[in-house]
Amino acid sequence: MITLEALTKDYGATRAVNELSVQIAPGKVTGFLGPNGAGKSTTMRMILGLDAPTAGQALINRVPYAKLRYPLHTVGAHISGTAGHPGHTPRTFLKALAQSNRIPVRRVDEALAEVGLASVSGKRIGGFSLGMRQRLGIAAALLGDPQILILDEPMNGLDADGISWIRQLMRTRADAGGTIFVSSHLMSEVQQVAQQLILIGRGELITEAPTLELIKEFTQQVITVRTPQAAEFTGLLVQRGAEVSTLGEDRLEVSGMPLEDIGALAFASHVELHDLSTSHGSLEIAYNQLTHNTVQYSAELAKGAGIK
Image (tube, rainbow, N blue to C red; front, top):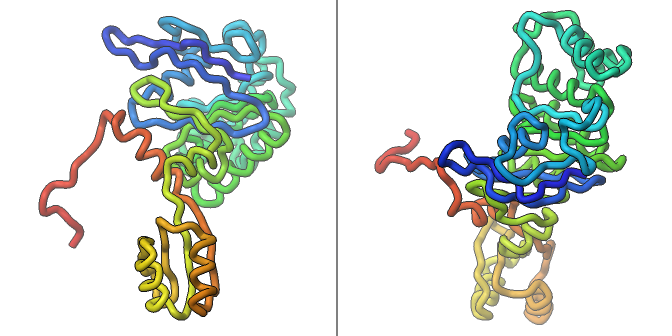
């Protein structure tokens, strides 16, 4: 369990994190979201004792990180985006970490194999791509086989196979009772892997909720209809006050009318249906709605600009 109690961080006159109080529970992947400058990295650094809070506290299993005698056995973290000195090899880098935390040396090769770097364990880190260095940072986080993982933008630099791998890694560890706390700007990936979400803006908590509940609450329900009588059915739906968008010759997107009423109307009107299903919008839509007032850095497209 990670517990934040009124966690606060000031840098001079600037408050980066303001009285943040949340719990990150075991057995699930918790996504940590917010615009650039929202305080996500600062919060993670305070959890790991890298930055001292101005007020409040961050606890790992009820104690501050600094009081964990061999912290890599309890919590593994990768928050810097890179790992290891360019002149070192993955094996020497991980071996030093293992020795400092009394981790068996055999775990070095096990962790490298787990992240797919066994074949380059003797090569210098300076020649690694961003994706390879991301894998090395995750190997360091896994070295002590901890119950808690804290990962800041772990998908940066990874290819499609790497993203699929890290997604499965987080799910597997959460299913085994682990606590996974992950920050990412890749909304589609967070939606796929996180069961719980914490959103912050300008250092303050915006909301915390199960992922599916948040999406349902802040996005409109959309009903998809497939019928060979699309034009005829569109007219009938509009007459009943529904909003209809045409997505193809036989596919409609309907809102403003319950699914049951759409089905009943089709039956009564002898309209043949090939599909009648419902869905909600994406996490990205919900996120943008919740955070639009807290974005500090945004860009405007210049008038007349466009792709030619």
